[in-house]
Length: 305
Image (cartoon, helix red, strand yellow):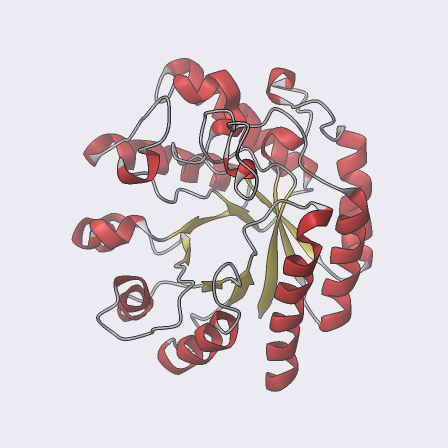
């Protein structure tokens, strides 16, 4: 059973505009060519995770690592390959399985820098091949690889300077391309499931059962007519493996509500675990939010042990 935490080494995944001077609370939701990451918080996060019984950490790598194949992507201060290797060893020593994440949704690919404006071109595919292969190698052949793929809609990009939304056959071509590259490296593809919210029938028809699903819902109303909550049921009805995702982004009680709901409605053999994330950068100013999220999941783990 996976009890995981998504932590961002890279937080370059929101608007491609620079934050205006008046932006304070949400400045990290704007494009920032810098490493939004504090070592002090990272060190305390991983120790707390191990202490409360969590066993998996998903690392959003993005432009926070200096790829040998594509060094131009890295932001100033990005980790060297050697640093990442050292950190992965420490995580494993703590009993935490590290899983890589690169989000290829056009809504969250600012980390690709200029390549995010070359979507679905031969050059773009070559870059993706290199990054996926190098990440799998760096993580020593992980069993899972999270590809993101959430919120690729016009509405979610309404404040962007440059809007790209793949649809129909192109979306499927590209997502199947990512799956192939991940599987070629020996890992299992893992995605956010919200493409299903607006494309239910084609999703259930074409999405391979081999792809691990993380539907997400951060509210506190699990009525069955709520699309995000209903998707847990529909994925279960079509026998997809799931790792439901919750967050204290809005409601701290979302953690316990999600775990209770999904344990009741998803068969144990397809409920592979749970994932939490605070949707904040790994920065000291968000320390309380990070620790709260970890402790909420830790409390849930203790209650079912």
